[in-house]
Length: 409
Image (cartoon, rainbow, N blue to C red; front, top):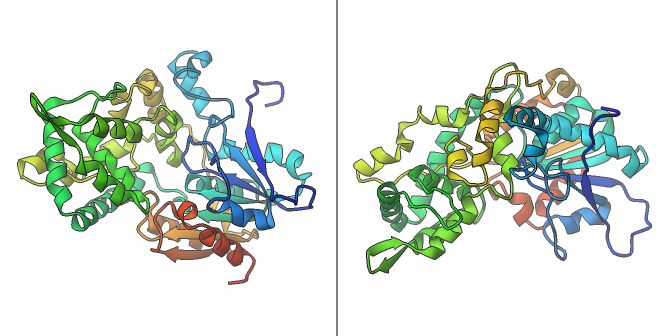
């Protein structure tokens, strides 16, 4: 509010060489997450080259991320104790991010509406933008990020665990040898409860959460190669190799993106109900994810992914100081609504969305229900890509979305 505390927002302007002085429409990119800064590109990569053919691009580090004023275990104590930290972090959801965009749009564009490109959680932000400030948008391009409009976090995870099971079984079908490897690793972890080199407490639940890899196009291959060399022979017998432990630490640690863990379930919070560690509670409704039971039956464990659970704040040294703050956020009930169905039903902004069939991270049926609500939205449903389609497809995904909003396809 005017006269209140200020935070810094960082945005990186990108323009094609030789067009620095050209009059170009603006496209603002909203990264997935929450809690991740915008891409740092080197050279001409992925979708950016396609965007620069038509736009001047703003790569925005959403509040708390990247080069914007940070929010993490080192800086949050400046706010005070856990209660003050939780109150502060309640202002880091899609609604606040859209208000940030509107606060800077006039300065960036001279008042002209701009196009927003929302990847994953960035698509949640774009959907809120369509609800709250459609006058600021020339068009909205959404990839892997059409949220449920009024479903509780419990609904999100009841839909998610069956997808996680399908992705796990598909991985074991592709790499049958990994079933025995995963079983052996889980048994070892259950017996030894190792602590990884960076201080991460590696439990069977943490091992299962490596399934977050299965939501990307090359994730099943990366998981396979990770499991392939998990053990090394030592004088004391077989043990998890240093290389395996180091790789696992890099995948599981939230040191670089603590807001993802703190605000992940809060992305779905609205309507006066707490999230109350939804993913962990709902998991109990799917007993096949009980690793102990799987091991007792001689079966490999199922992997999980895109689910933040309370035990992570005990396992991850970057999150441990924030556990009480996370509990307060999980108990919070005064979350405002994020989406206005009546406004979306009357939408006049050109919108196109790529929906990835059986996306691990965002439920396809929820996305399609939202797509039907937003007037004029055009969808492209594809199983050619996983959740990272924008990143791995070169210009193709963005090119198709631009064609859809322009009526060229």
